[in-house]
Length: 472
Image (cartoon, rainbow, N blue to C red; front, side, top):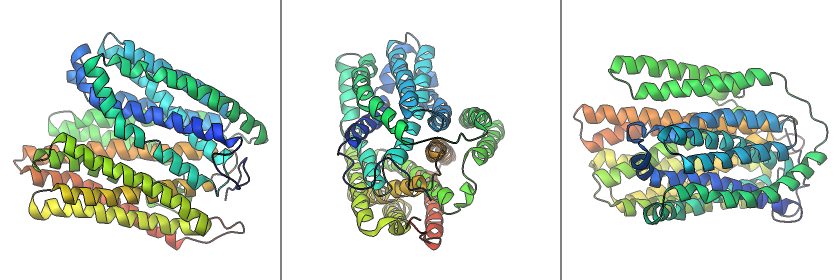
């Protein structure tokens, strides 16, 4: 079980040589988070401006699909060379994507910019996760995972509002251009520190099969595209065939790219990644259709629904901070229990919201706030802790591979989860179901994912067996 890191586990993630690594890594995550949350606000405006209404969904998919390839490439390259080189290249590509998207004269050029952004973001995230493994001792990783989780809080609170203001008062293009100065701050903070860390990590054993892994990543991206295209096709039998073909391709490629036992949550590495991905998918599905329920039949304004999401973001951050402090007291042996408690909190929160809609065919703001605070708290406990478990099981020379695997799990859960739940919602509405009934059908898929996450968390609990170093 991996305990390797440049730091010795004493001190803080904010002290000494780790400070620029911490700040730069958090800023990198913040930038990617901001552009994603901001785009949801300005997408209708830019679609009207450059002619993308008919391809609206691909404004987002054009980012996700190349991100799959970037995640794998970044992960395997950081195992072969200096993280500074890998991070720097993907930082430049992300920046070029921002420039191209902001200057795009047409939707086709915009998609090209989004693809570069996605490819760059995948490599950036893979590099950051690998650096967390390399630079920080196992005892410090929960604190760093909490810090990276908190990097989403400010973008979620102010990102949509700022982006909307800029787009309405000035021009939506400035939202993309405004990220460039921040990227120029990230580079000098991270690159020298990342390079020093590479010099301290020693000789690397290059993993075989990098070309095959890259080809599998490309095939995974294509399968994802086929899956997403199939969801939009008509008639239903053609959509079913194409979607099924894409889903089969997704599963086959994930079996090649992910740790063995990923679909049965085999402890500890594969199980931790499985639980993390299932929680992420359940969270996104529940968030999407909770907001739909609030605004569609809960008689709640979009602004008020946003307050519910903010409450969940704050509780997610609180949960992340709690798990970091908890880890200092219990060490590695307490991590599986923390994941289980986090999943349990999510079951309570999502179950409260889902059950209310099922029973009353309605939803209220109080139930939503309570349920979503519990859900966010559970994510804050389970998500970073399962990430820490996975990273602690990365063997030397495979830090990037494990990092990319954790991120691929999230991408798989988000793309298939939102896509399939969207099909369920559409089926319910076109079959003349009531809006509450169709919503519960869509949310049911998230409940299924959460039940699978509980099964995985229980497997992690049963597999706890500290080794000589106390790691699990």
